[in-house]
Length: 61
Image 1: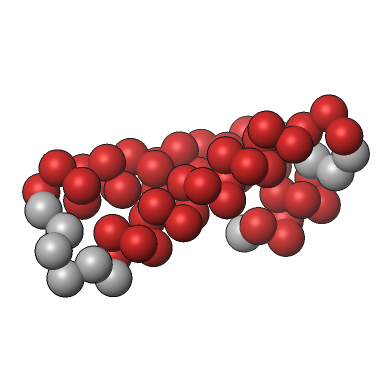
Image 2: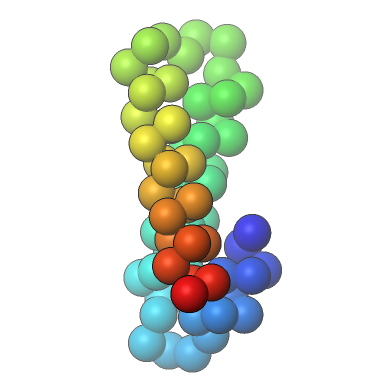
């Protein structure tokens, strides 16, 4: 996913967008593999994944 986003948003003007993708993905992975994740952190991680899916959908338009 990261490679696709970089390919679609290359250049200096989109550093924040690429950074958002990296942070949202890292958060989702961290919560997914955390033995102490609770309902709140799982919900926030799910929202991060939804954000990523929406970003991909928009980039494909």
